[in-house]
Image (tube, rainbow, N blue to C red; front, side, top):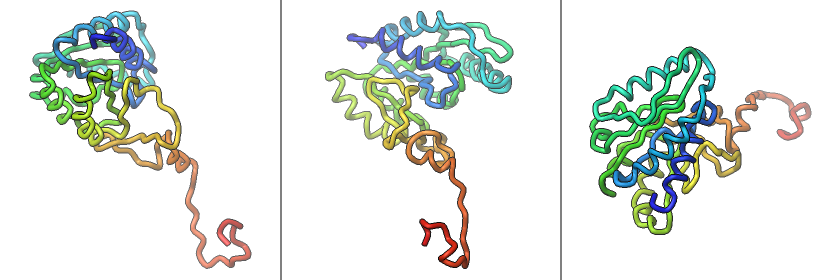
Length: 227
């Protein structure tokens, strides 16, 4: 954070608002040391403030986004960093901050808000950051923003994060998904996914396949590949 906290905050804001926040890999939660959180919050707030209203896919999704916003905003200990106005099918960004202690005391804060809403969770110590990581439900992705000096803490976090998410990144943002053989688009519940419906990775081909059973068919009339 000391080296590039503002850049991380701006990058997070861009990922958070991509596609009106409707990417399934949208990084809605940032866990930051309390003494460094202001750097990220200020940069993200300034970047988000310049984001206009975006149209969501359906009115129902937009209503659910506003309901999720209200749920987060009304949790004791949550403080507003950026608020905006949106109605009908529009989505505008919101940014909140909460202490790690209040986060750990309210399971509802870990529930997804589908849309461009960011929540900064401040950790007083490395031990509290690890405790927050352990509290997460299953995720599609988890990201470590780090330099060489953060390697010791990253090594302590990795065994936790790899059990919480299907994809673990370093120094990047998860909305930049590459469709390649190594890609995993799923994670522990509730981020689990039917492999036959995933849109990325080699298993995506199953979306376009339909099983056919051949019973007692003479070899000479079977498809060539099955003879």
